[in-house]
Image 1 (cartoon, helix red, strand yellow):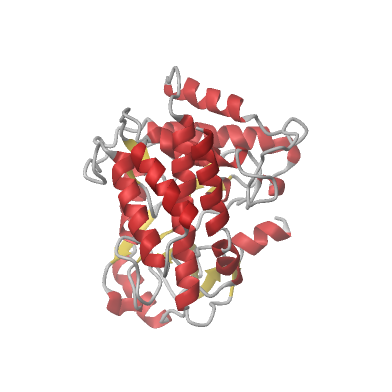
Image 2 (cartoon, rainbow, N blue to C red):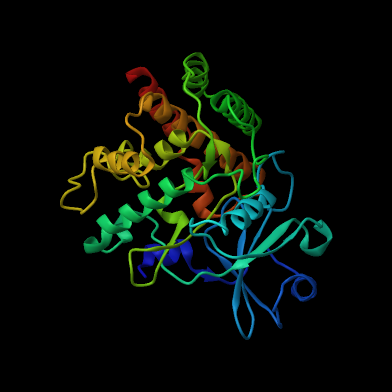
Length: 350
């Protein structure tokens, strides 16, 4: 594991302000987690900016705990209960997810809602640069296969038909993320406001419904320790029922993002990096899902840049009010305006 991987996915002592009452947690797990045996030790993952994430260590096994952050929260944000529900339902399918054990919606136990799942041992790559060169094509193909498989799941058959509203996806998402963006800033950012206006005026007519992850990317995946095979997809906080091509397009934003900006691949020699082109990657998804042609790709791209910008504006708001104090949160928040600029440029090019 590289230093970059460790910086994101490794654990360390629980940071100040994120402490958990070990005795209260141990009591809860004794009563609600099958096979649990304490005592517990608690370490905190260095990732998990939205929902603080912990490793729970016992003499016989390890667990992961995801909780809502403390303090004042946006109404629909940090939905650990939705994460728990969709992961539990998907365990009945071929989509790779961690096993879940318990969901606690009683704030009095450790101060906020949380759920407990397996600690899946494997590799997490922060960007493609962390992945072994010779494995990259296969790692990308595994990502493609997994998201195509997710979008083909019959959500009715696994009991989550009410996991989100069906139809009118873009209008609903635009309303949701516009409200969160506006709640996170003292005054609007003009390019973001212009992008919102363009998106509302150009909503595509085509409408499809599938389970969408909402934040599907390489650092939300645990790969097998030695094989290019996915063991678990992480971070289902904003998953819902929605438009599968919007979800897939979000995953493909890396090909449009400038190199050096997060996971950006634009302008790089992809062949020498053993990474598929956007065209080949999209074609593989279409082949796996049976889609003949993707229309409105530019709209999906502009929409996703808006949505990510809205999320990052939310992180910026939490940095300002002190509920997100890490260096990673501060660095991420600086991307809010550039992402809005890029989304507006995409809209104008469309």
